[in-house]
Length: 105
Image 1 (tube, rainbow, N blue to C red):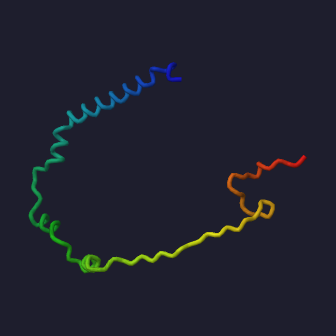
Image 2: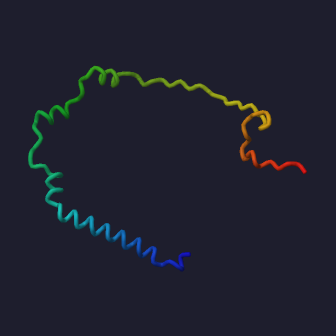
């Protein structure tokens, strides 16, 4: 019960605190490498920037952009199950098992 084990929440809190301290220490020690990765010294060349920002000109993209929305066709489906007993080799009914029947007597 919870009265017998008050140390379980204390251990969980301790483990979480240790993980947080380790993460903070790693961030402080590796901050220079993290900031160099996030803030690049070299600028992206203008030709690459223009290529990435230019609108796509492929024929496939233009055909998709100018096409009408696809009309979806939905057909009604009805499922009819034939009722057969286990003795006839049919499926079991919901909530029934092979061992649930007791012999007469």
